[in-house]
Amino acid sequence: MAVFLGVDFGLKRVGLALSDYQETFAVPLTIHQYRSKEYLIDYLHNLIDSRNIKKLIFGLPLNSDGTEGKKAKETIRYVDDLSHYISEPIVLWDERYSTQEAETRLSQIVQTKKKMKKHLDSIAAQIILQSYLDHHSNGFN
Image (cartoon, rainbow, N blue to C red; front, side, top):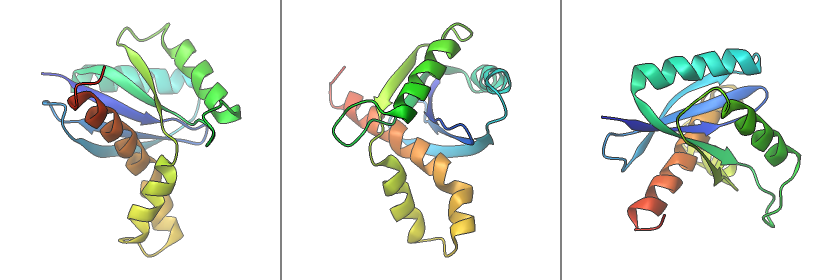
């Protein structure tokens, strides 16, 4: 059985989330401190092997009007580089407002900004992956 990996990519932190085996819901996994491209590639390779991941869903941080800004272009460049090292398919998925939604969710249960920051990127990855799963469970491709 295989799962999908949701990725909220950033040059400081990378939030990760996993789908269940039926590909119906996403759960936050962890936050990985970004050290270098090579280190993250190795980390993802290990995660892919140990969790039987069949597809990576990278959040694409588009501007509110749908255009690509600096962060979206960084993500696209990273995914392009990553695709040379990882054989599993990588999908770019619109992540507009996922961080704001994660902040809203966390603010209801976490009292301090420090604790919120500790979980924010993995919750954003969960939101990105859940959006992808929901879209595809409704018959969209």
